[in-house]
Length: 406
Ligand code: NAD
Ligand code: AHE
Ligand code: ZN
Image (cartoon, rainbow, N blue to C red; front, top):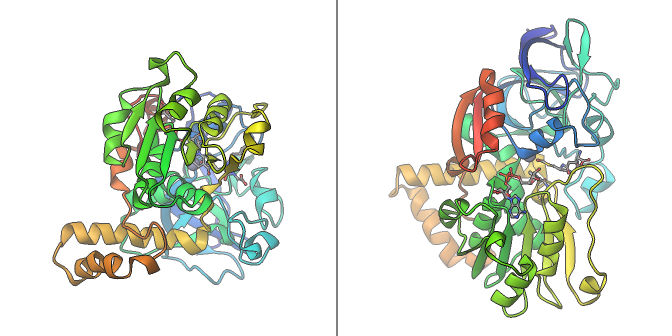
């Protein structure tokens, strides 16, 4: 198939909100600096639903959505040196070229190399799409388009991972789980003993709770309008639960009263601008930091009294949890694999090493060096052909991540 057009199945979003259609899609060979990937598993993230809804200013139709996936390299274009056919990979919507001013700054995980193309659904070299249906071009999405059996991505958007990692699980490391963990470890840098409020207990919010627990937070207060979320949230580290519907007072006041003046850190994992305001205003005067993780619709804006910032609260945001994708996704896969290894063989030398290292050298290890959960976020498994059912499931409270076999 190398160098040839591949015809395969993909879920095409022809129009906002109209059911996706499984089409025979032609996927052109990768050009210079591009990689064609056989996608084996993809999960759905709420950002896919957001763009499908038509509320994303960068949403273009028709397109192939999907950005949380894993697969195997099928072929590479000219000049691609870091991956080769057969490599197991995770596509990364947040690229990492290691050369642009963003990558070199050391201050951000955002990369500037291909962002101007991925925001408008095309490839960088010729500003064209590699997907078509009967000659009609179909836009790419987030530089990944994983709701397809084959996709073409920029080489700077591919993380090569341990080939023994189960792709039906580690596909989640393409978005939601790293976003929550990294929001805590990289963006907020939560210290041991901190109090934390998490708004929204979906996959991203639960990963925030998991990250906060690993960082040694003393209180992790989960806030959700769906009380059914709480039981499961305890397994991820949430210690207390607040449903805004149970209170007459504004939720920020409830939290301030519960925490002697406010929390040290808060995270908005919903995409609702009034909740973003509440998340900032429930932070402690003088130092409380609030991180925006949720993605809000086109036209929505945040507001608060500037006095909130004058008196020391800090408002931040995060994309992909601040992780540098190509460098750190393989590291996250390794952390997950340690957990798999340790749970299958508790007395292995690896177990002993990882059990005692954190105790003897704890102060030397980076924050969040513990094992990470992945399987626990997967509540449903379906096939690509059932993708519309998978989108329906996302609106049900019981669903965290649904993984599709592609
Ligand atoms: P999700 O829908 O599974 O979780 C959202 C949760 O918020 C649900 O449990 C829901 O009951 C709760 N909720 C809704 N309205 C609420 C309110 N007013 N008050 C309290 N709780 C409320 O979504 P998810 O997949 O976890 O994603 C969360 C958000 O993060 C989405 O906006 C998504 O687009 C965004 N996201 C951002 C990044 C990033 O890099 N910044 C990465 C992944 C996802
Ligand atoms: N196109 C949207 C922006 C959406 C957005 O903020 N995306 C996040 C990742 S969400 C993953 O589930 C992100 O990484 N943003 C940084 C970037 O460069 O896109 C809009 O609203 O315009
Ligand atoms: Zn996502």
